[in-house]
Image 1 (cartoon, one colour):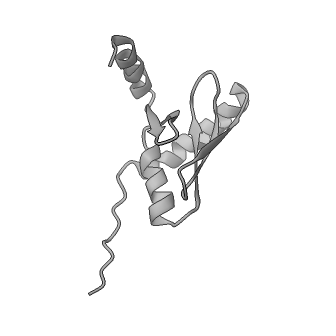
Image 2: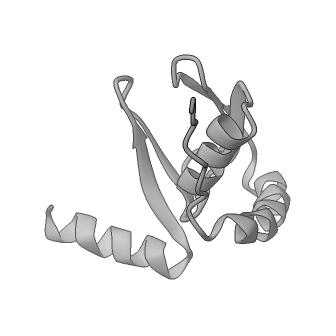
Length: 109
């Protein structure tokens, strides 16, 4: 990593944010640090077909829908003033995803 990237990640970390990238599409989002746990909980734990989270990218903040079937994502961009209200709600919700969700093994015995 370049020095600038490391400094950027450090700044994000101070805000409880991180970068999340989805392959093979290369979607890259600035997300709450617990977003990966939330996605796992939504898709694996609850069996949802879509997981929803916010992208905190300053230039284009928005709500992302991630489709479980193919991990394709699309984003609805909001003006910063509207986005802040959504971010406040999401930050509260994300507290419940601070731990990795454990799922029992399927047992056929």
